[in-house]
Length: 269
Image 1 (cartoon, rainbow, N blue to C red):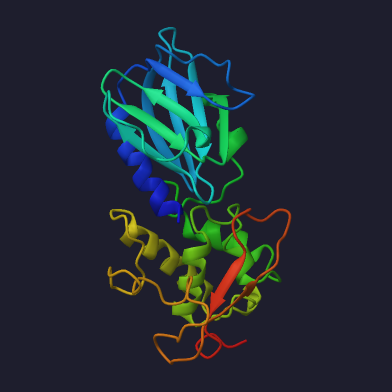
Image 2 (image 1 turned 90 degrees about the vertical axis):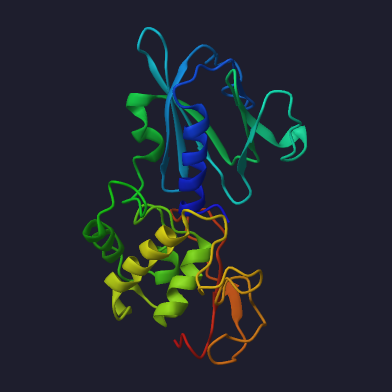
């Protein structure tokens, strides 16, 4: 699931492979940006912002342009050596190709692709709240934003990237289970909201260095999660059947999946 930890790790891999190199290929397979020519530009850095990736490039005249991408639910970036066969999916799913003399980065099934002057990155990510894994993390600001609409269900509020950036459906489900909070609980009624926010950050931080998103302490397949994706299975704590339902959608909430997973016994309400 491409949540903040996955995007953080992806940015690090891409930065290590591409930063400091010049683009020999910059193929943006998007109707709006297909004619944009970034060849010859130096890739200065690739940084994460919540669930977003910012690939910053600089021309010889100092003009700075950023390619903003979002993995969505199924997106991924693959790295290939010259002559290596691409294997991330069929060609029609490719949205971006960046190549240098040493490596090719291919973006598959990317939900968003946008090109903006680097000075205008705020146009695409300025709405985001504090980044759970970013240098701008500010727990007090995240709590202020959550409490600004205290009547919202906590399960909806946590997915709104304007409150805190990086948490998605998986961590929303796991954090609320571990804190014993029903996804439908109004923000104002959450017993210890700072602890919820702190746990979200700690879980993302614990997983950002590894490809397996585990919240139970086990990395074994089928044992990584408490409730996420386990509808109909017994709760690992009490044996009650895990439930799932649509939390509902709000036009200004993050457009990720809204399927909630919870244990009725461990998360009453």
